[in-house]
Amino acid sequence: MSTTTAWPIVFDDVLAARERLRPFLSPTPLRRYPALDREVGHDLRVYLKHENHNPTGAFKIRNALAVMTALDAASRRRGVVAATRGNHGLGLAWAGAELGIPVTVVVPRGNNPEKNEAISSLGATLVEAGADYDEAVVAAEGLVRERGLTLVHSTNHPLVIAGAGTLALEILEQQPDLDALVLGVGGGSQAVGALTVVRALKPTAAVYAVQARGAAAIHDAWHSGVARAAASADTFADGLATRGVYALTFEALRAGLAGFVAVEDAELAAALRLLLRTTHNLVEGAGAAGLAALLRLRAGLAGRRVAIVLSGGNIDLETLRRVVSREL
Image (cartoon, rainbow, N blue to C red):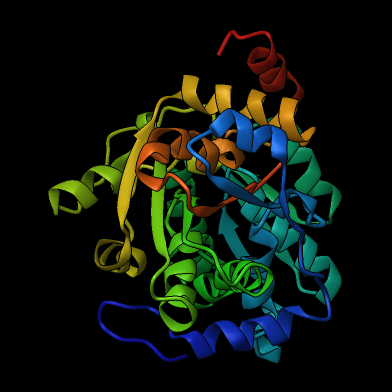
């Protein structure tokens, strides 16, 4: 794996990950919806990358497969472990079932039961530990020491970032004339993967990032220049609910992003409803983050071709009810 001090991967790493993923995943669609373009306005042409159409309903299956397909035989026999609020664990469980690799997934106590059930149904061992995602990571690290498992961090792993980069690679192959991408950030794998691809294929394209205001540690660190973890992560968007700033992605985000915004949960919910109405696609809170940010950024991107990513569609029934009934 090729790395530099500030940039965790190179473009060749993304190309290699794409070859390992090819037997398992087909490219997801990139589509435009005239009704959505009209709602966004400002003569924007909005392209939606449908990662919600992946086998696990989320882009993180790419990250999981990129790591799991590169493991040596001994590591495959011992198995892997990771912390998750849902989609990363689902990706690992799916990849483990396909490749015959034991998977242990650590979720925070009180994690969404629908996501827990989905992970367990794929054959992974589910462990509940910690009050939130970051505490679950600590528990997963403990299992590495106790059992010799391989830790697959959802962000802080070069192969994870390379897997996420295959998403942006597909986007630029599907729409080479793209002017910008607006991407949600939990830990930053999707955004740093995209920045790596953009630097190689379309340096004129701008990459913007978005976090939830209630879980904005990386956003705040990006603006202040001080990498400091937050005390809490409070958002209904599970995929964005992190409070850490991650060594492998932070400097690349600082060096490469054109802008970084934080949106309220109400904006995420409104974007989710707008996507449901104009595209009839169901997404989770994190999957609506790109649109929520684009609605903030649209005046400055007027007339441009902009891609957003429906990064996941695994919203639970009760949260969906609250969103649709405008309780959120």
